[in-house]
Length: 117
Length: 113
Image (cartoon, rainbow over all chains, first blue to last red):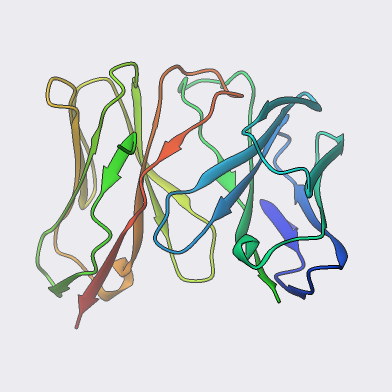
């Protein structure tokens, strides 16, 4: 595996279900991110982990619960979601602090397409 | 008002034409400006980045930043059908990771053979 991988790629769940999204990065980075991408809206940053500590939580509802057990893995636990939570959930990783170029290049996974019924 | 504005398109051009994309922003603290390309069913991938104002060229791609106008552009010369994708601008106030990128909504581009 190379780059950033995400599983599952597609997920359909009911409002009462509990599910988890998984992200793994194979780039040796130490910062990981969850984004939500809805149709015709900008990417919304949900959570940032740097050195396995959460450094950003953008007022995300508690029905989304992140977990970062180590610098290579990131999870997003989902429970009692709403239909408006249907979206593409993207994971990204980067190096903290940035090396060389001095900018925050984030490498994205392919995303999990989530549909909440 | 959104921090970063980007026309959603779609922008349809014939093969070989110049594609012109742009974003406007309101936060004068932004220093790093990036363009990401996102193909259907894929995550965004970085195309180009620029620090502060000026131009940067990479092959068929040219990125421009005008901080005085809070306006950035991406030009694609000799466009190909493989350039059909959604293009996202992104910006960051400082270079340390752990700081968020602020994205535009993306412009969908279709290059017709």
